[in-house]
Length: 432
Image (tube, rainbow, N blue to C red; front, side, top):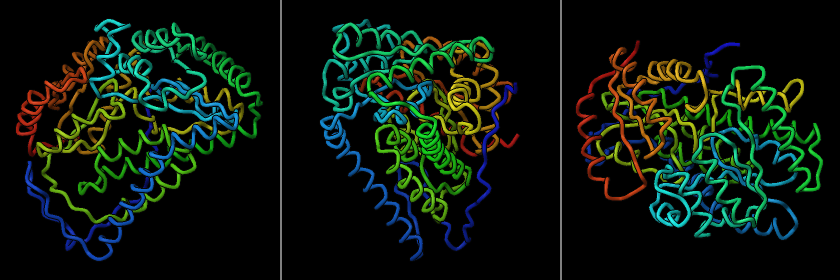
């Protein structure tokens, strides 16, 4: 089997006439942008698409509650891209990935039941369970907990201790590249299918599963196309907006999400927004960026930099590859979710593969430097940051390591370090 990831590329490009290039004053100063009538219309259409999505997300909890009252099951799952939500969707249930984080209230609330040595995202999942403020967390009928890192595993066990909803633990083999590991995961995926069939009372037929795979492949297609537009030096969509779209795809109705992403892609592809080509282009690496955890992206932007691509394990939907649609679909799902994708850091033999993928992203997206965004007490990514630091030094690629506990007191320190880093790398572009 190949150990490299081949990015499925979008061959279309944005043709931006010189007269439409905008001027930009770097730093905290406001950007001055000039648009033609067509560009004004594009921005308006993009705004409308985003507003429609915002309205949909505001109404989504009420829609889910109405579905529950009609007997539809809602199945939540923790992130990491190891839970094939296509199986949940094909059963007639509604899959919801629980990715909220970034705030201190849920992290602080979790201290009633877990120690501070757990990472803030895992503690946030416990806090959400205790506070019951976010409707998605209080309306699910079953939680699927992938056994990835020890922190999320413990968060799932805390949920299980309360005993009020069913917990299905989905075993994830850490030896993803072995036949034994793949077969184990296939068996666990089949067990997941059996469990969701039991809780919904519906059979997951081949036809329904094929429809679900096609639907979620379309979401991955569109996210990948939008992401690849960020290779353009005149960035048509900011990464903060892209990550919010990615997060929305975990909560929104998937058909509505496809329509929204199609509109955003067409508008971004034809956008004539200009950006200073000398603005530092950054790659964001790390274990997790949760829904609501946007502090780092906002600080980078306010400091005059721009994150143009990300490589994250949890919190975002993996979109670089689709699930193959031929043959046994359960086998295809298991292979796609475990072996074909880029492995997270808790997997064995994963660091070199992610390093190679990162270096390809640096080249493809003309990256000037890396920001390694770690979460406090995430020992797996904390350890790996040393390996990446050494390798980036060998390739003469600047790298900054930041760490967060979802608190508010570190904002000033983070801002100072980010500003100093961006000043250091200004004018640096890696093409090799």
